[in-house]
Length: 197
Image 1 (tube, rainbow, N blue to C red):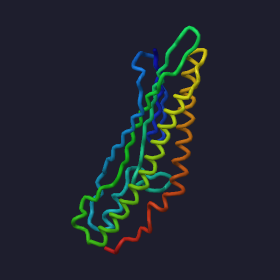
Image 2 (image 1 turned 135 degrees about the vertical axis):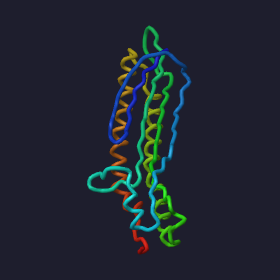
Image 3 (image 1 turned 30 degrees about the vertical axis):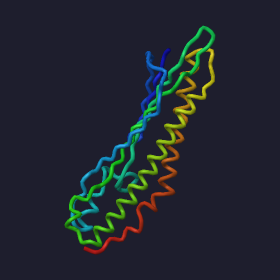
């Protein structure tokens, strides 16, 4: 029994592909983990808080207030016989990280301003959860796709098919994420009217 692992990470657009052979169990599963990481946005007025609502450098001239990144990897387990190679099971692992602002001085804010920021944070998290759903769906499609690979003459063919399938699904995920942002980002941003300081 063997396995081939292909990894692809989407961390700010970087992709790495790697393959290796080893032995291991035929039982496999899809593991999906989500971690929410907060960054501090200090201030008690809109004028103080808004400049701190930024993860890092602007993207296309726009500040990034919240961000979802992911890494998806898969291992294809197979059984080799003299006549053919058969997929026994895949293991798919997806690690998702959502970065969100945290209002450090929320207790010092006027109630109407705090309420406006809390509504914005709720909308931003809902938007980022949409990206999370796309990643979860892609991981499950990779699992189902690898399971459906028919027996092949060689295990190299299994490996090629599994990796091509995974890469195709991740390319579609990249596009789906871009389309989702274009379609849903205005809703996440809301009206963005904050009470005057």
